[in-house]
Image (cartoon, rainbow, N blue to C red):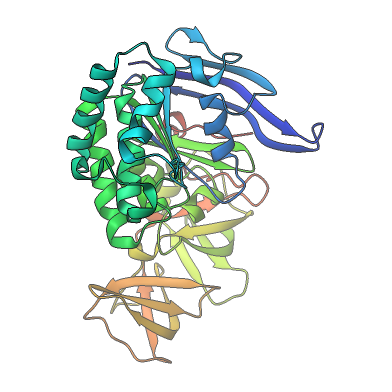
Length: 380
């Protein structure tokens, strides 16, 4: 097995007019499972293809273990890749698809290749399908064949390019568990690219968030969720998305009043909280961020609560989503037994340590403590 090191990786197209990946640096220890997530066009698949050797980097270095593989051909990198569209040969049987890589890139004899394929097929539960052609298989079976084809290689690195996006929701959940089980069993360094933040949060030891080709943040899923270093990460990670309000900060009684620029929101940060900040925020404008599950109903009006109107109530089983008129797409995620009517006034609050204040100039969370900033990586 091997670690992966990416140094200042860059990929340009059309003579530099399009920058798909911009100065990306990552350290992935041996055996770690890393998920890479971001919106469409953020550079995640391009990064994966450069790691596999299918795309040539414009600049930067790629190391697998101690070996610089930046200019090494894909077939000479000890890497196995699982694709979104399965990439199975339609005229070959399942056995022939799984064996093909071994036959082309190793000096194994037929008997050894056959044993390796049958072991992998048994592990994936597809041993009875070895004589079938891909068009005879379901989507889940095709994905198992694609995974089995990667496993037989016993590579130093697994690369997954949105491998479950073509499957239905129930099968995706099953296959997520399967991939995690295999990674735990083999301990192979793995990079898993996905557009699905639920996959990214539940599968990875560490999550990497990209936007516009730049690294935004990397860290353990819980750390990234609780301490987003900028507004993009705060809004991208989490479902429902983080609520945002434009506010002005004004000194008040040793603390800070945060007042909505539209005038229908006010919240007081205590003097104790303000004293612990790294900077004086009074007199400035920010984007306040608060996650829907941190907003809760209260019966006691105070300088830490606000009154708003319920526009829509959306039941989702164990919870209700209350859509409120305090701001655009502002949602409170509450228990299912909280059931106001549309148009009702409701008093809500949240704890100040759950607040994020994002700078309108840089997007950075000015309330992130030193520990959070040290643990995370922010792009320029």
